Length: 392
Image (cartoon, rainbow, N blue to C red; front, side, top):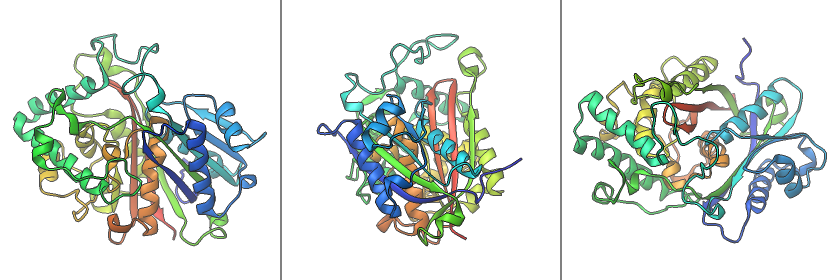
């Protein structure tokens, strides 16, 4: 089987600082992100041969109009909160196949103008009001995993909440060092543990913010990349898995793991030639829409043994100075979650880490970096895992 390994390179990236961007609409945001990526690569609009975009509106109305990319192919990707990861994957496939030389992958969202709180799930049946899962909001869906994790592995509420609080503290500490983060203020364990409950046992600091944001990547082949910049970043592997709603239909669903994560990671690791991800990865960005999401992701991606993630978290394994720095950007917790852009926004941190340009968040001697982007709700998810490495 053909793989993505060393067939695709990133030569430019842009990331709009997320926030409540009342003075911009999604077109403004995508323009800012794409031009930052073009400037980073030293390229112009005319160099882009095709584009993939994640957004609520169709690509032809959104990207071609905004960037004046008249008549080039533009594909619109919608895959829930994994839209950006899938957007990037699709763009990579066309470059790896040799059909285009230089392409654009991007995404943007205007969550604050949606007229709703959080993610608008109306009208598509995605809340989970079928099978064995009752209709609930998004935080409740993930709170189910926290409750089951305690029962399944024998943790007390205090023990689990302390581990989750430790993740929130870590991410806020990293976010305070990131000029692209929305929340740039550290928090204490006491603040995290005593925060108002959103969906028991998850509190305020266990939940990310759905806010405005955008990100973009310029993708090409390595033989072209070396003529554009010396510090391009290589794609080493991409894995994706989509669930079939088994968890909404089967009462034996475990609620302590995401099978889609395991399969996507396995496929990405195989392409990249990774045998022991905990030892071989230098850095990881995980989809921490909720702290329990991050905790379970660590185990799904073989970055902690099953049932042991709380112990690893409390030991500081994933801190900036730890054995495997994780969510050095501050994660979704501090960088926000504009769904159609989130996956590429996470890759922006991987890109900077592999270039050695992450400033005070820089990991030592980076070799391989992972970006994990996940979308869906209880019982059925879409996961995309990307592995990146510095140029050979």
